[in-house]
Image (cartoon, rainbow, N blue to C red; front, side, top):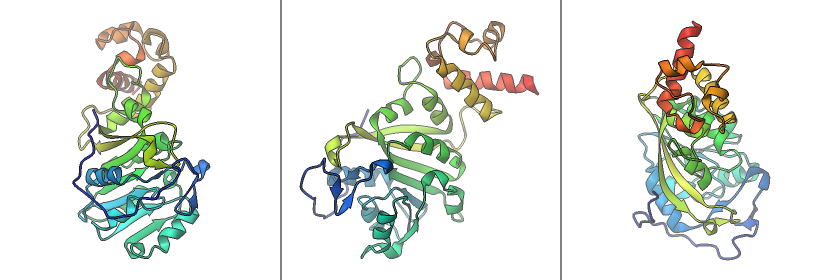
Amino acid sequence: MFKKHNNDYKKKTNNSSGNHNKGSYQGHHARKNFGQNFLRDQQVIANIINLIAPGDQETVVEIGPGLGALTEPVCEIIKHLNVIEIDRDLAYRLRHHPFIRDQLTIYEQDALTMDFSKLKEEDKNLKIYGNLPYNISTPLLFHLFEYSDVIADMTFMLQKEVVDRLVAGPDSGDYGKLTIMAQYFAKIVPCLEVPPEAFTPSPKVYSAVVKVIPHKSKPYVARDYDLLEQIVSSAFNQRRKTIHNSLENFFTDQIFNELDIDPKMRAENLSIEQYVNLANYLAEHRE
């Protein structure tokens, strides 16, 4: 499923030595409340740069640049980069970076509060990437999907468990609300698995890089997205029950049969198309 490392991109840099589990790296102490784990493996960095494929034909945005492991090589390729950094100490370092500071526009704020549409330039879509803190990755993805119409693609480092859920299919334990809502908006492509020792401090879990490409035209269109989300949430909140029970406040067995859906199925057995059909049926009959 995941690609192995390649040598398409190389950057000359000194690889810091020492205990990967120490909280301090390059003079900065990792803050647990921000979920900071700093990428340090140069071959992994090279592979991620290839996956991002930055270019001046798009408005490029980095979320959580940290100590600049990805920021510096990206700035070798493009003229201008927008970065969003909540840690004021790291934002300060970037503002005073001896080589790339003039190429950066720095937004010192929480990415969850960012209006990404304001970053879009005329005739350019957004290309977004980042090593996302595990504690905000899911809500941030949902926030970004609100701007999917102006985003060309996104490349993110996430907890591998989250990536497994993003790319899952029906009839699997990883298939859930995150799967359905993410695949409703975008094509999800797993690209690279990253071990804990690639970071300082080393996390306790494996990470993975994923490419998220918003659909230019959605395969299935919900007439009421909020209603779709409500139905999916209700189904997976009681995922061990059949949809006859978990969705009884929305549908009768007669409606399920009319839509060619077996009421004895459980939440993880339904496809995205079937959930959209259920939401559209309800939307049409509520009007």
